[in-house]
Image 1 (spheres, rainbow, N blue to C red):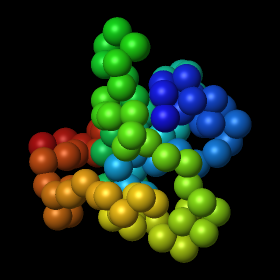
Image 2 (image 1 turned 135 degrees about the vertical axis):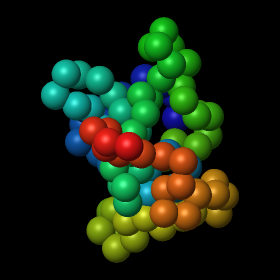
Image 3 (image 1 turned 180 degrees about the vertical axis):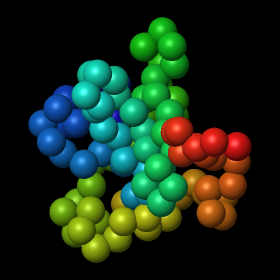
Length: 100
């Protein structure tokens, strides 16, 4: 999916994932597009600071099937059978607002 495709899908209230169904792309109340790892709440911007380069490959983004969204939150694979490893228990990623 291109950056424009991803934004259009999010704006149309479709569930967009990155890499696997554990990651969801959403728009916050400030209008920023973010990628959130659902199990621990950690997030990054959809793009780099310029707003033009995705934080991920276009081929890694996909719109959830209704079955995926409801039955498999956190499933570690994409519909094409490819997946990206995720550190156990979100190792190396911290939710926003967490105090160390």
